[in-house]
Amino acid sequence: MTAQQLNAEIYRNLAVLSEDEAMLEKAAKSLRRLVKQMNDNPTCMTKEEYFAMLDRSEQGPSRSFANIQELDRYIQSL
Image 1 (cartoon, rainbow, N blue to C red):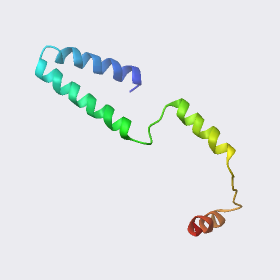
Image 2 (cartoon, rainbow, N blue to C red; image 1 turned 120 degrees about the horizontal axis):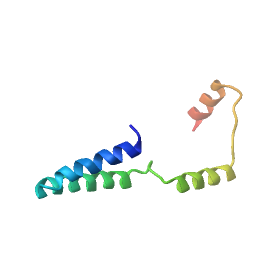
Image 3 (cartoon, rainbow, N blue to C red; image 1 turned 180 degrees about the horizontal axis):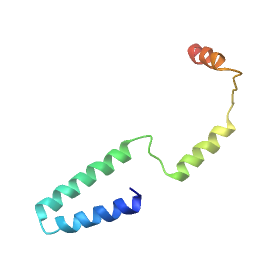
Image 4 (spheres, helix red, strand yellow; image 1 turned 180 degrees about the vertical axis):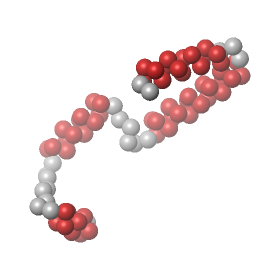
């Protein structure tokens, strides 16, 4: 399901819930909880933040490994 389809489904369901204030409040509470989880999750970032992180990583030192065994030895040495 695409984001546009999900968005439409959410709005259709909110329209149904809007007739019952108690149910609408439950929906709002659930949405606030989801937004808080997203904001508290350090892995969530905007596209701009992601590309800025990539730009910063390109400026630092880099390593390359000839094979997976070299990589394993390097990781184990950390």
